[in-house]
Length: 282
Ligand SMILES: [Zn+2]
Image 1 (cartoon, rainbow, N blue to C red):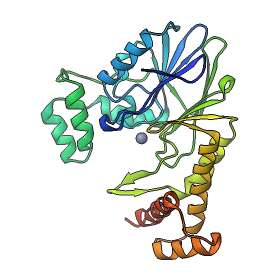
Image 2 (cartoon, protein in one colour):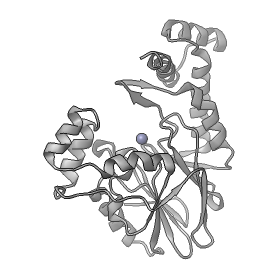
Image 3 (cartoon, protein in one colour):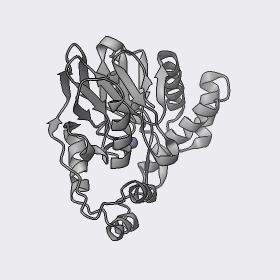
Image 4 (cartoon, helix red, strand yellow):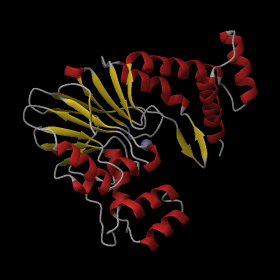
């Protein structure tokens, strides 16, 4: 079931047990736009089935928030213009060259080109895939793109981000709604979960320049302004305490600077910022 956020914005909630991120639908007078195409053709079809139940203008655009498989592998199923930034396009090119039969998938997992979870979802949700080829995106942009769906403007921007270096956000000024994809999350490299410390403040600046009141996140669904501000506050407070790869020193600084122990979220972020220092030495 789609959740109705406003008269013109809907979303399909993330489903963690199937690695399905939040998918968005923005409707203008003439056209509709989709945010992320799902983690498989099945995910895309489930979304399209829900959209059909609404009496909304045809889906003309699909914006992919970043080049992680769970956000774009369903793109073939939309008869629409697929929009990505140039960096996302570079990564998606690699997936266009891939084969999706069992032997190839296993090979990608063995060579760390694909996660085990990704292979399992593909095997479950794409039964007929021996000749599957991922299509190419249609529109490649560099920094920003504005689309008018008919009295409904969508501002699309590639921003600095802690999750990936190809993050795209979509802001709908009329509704004060912003789709963030996964941009505000950390990332895992060399099996180490870390939070890109140098990107945190530039990212917050890029997001906070928009007058948003509702935030849709890739694996959270929705946050209001208050929840988002708490998230930023905890992240920045944690980041300020981390100057080296020593967790002990970071915890000590946190206590000195804030005159208290970190809460659970802050502790999680402190560890992730410490890991970021460690990741730079690997
Ligand atoms: Zn992601």
